[in-house]
Figure 1: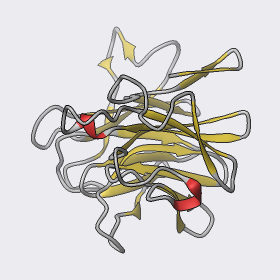
Figure 2: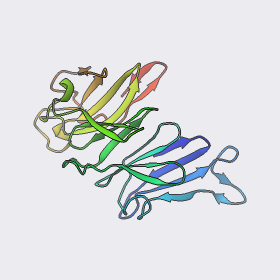
Figure 3: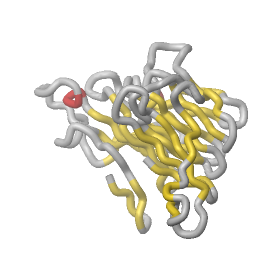
Length: 212
């Protein structure tokens, strides 16, 4: 996973025990490799730096100045270029850590494995549940077990969900795409049974169209 903040490129990865790390490269010229120095990456997070050792980083994003990282079973952490801070750990309830995050200049949004979306106000670190479990006319518990991707498009927040088939095959629930107007959610492009696919893993905007 890659994200850039100014002239710094961040890479997050993990494929085994203790591999959930974040590294950075301050880009000089056209890339993060030079003939004289080789790879010019610096370790910045993981292995008890910011969070305890973990196997993967599920999602990273930026609001333009700060890096945001979702760490399984530990929560969401922010990095200002020198210091890590814990932003949300789910300690007020039983929900696991987020697997998809999205940031803008005012809010950071977290989607998690229990099918809910949390909105974190950056200025005062106030968390509000805005989606899932029928909150704000959103999806209920049945069939919607994981929020897999979040994006902003044309003034709306979009959330992609994975159906129960992600974990248990044969019950007929597929992925769904939902849109939030700041007050209520509405399902987009699929009926209550969802798409045939079990999950929508990513979304992007290109030439004023949303792709998923």
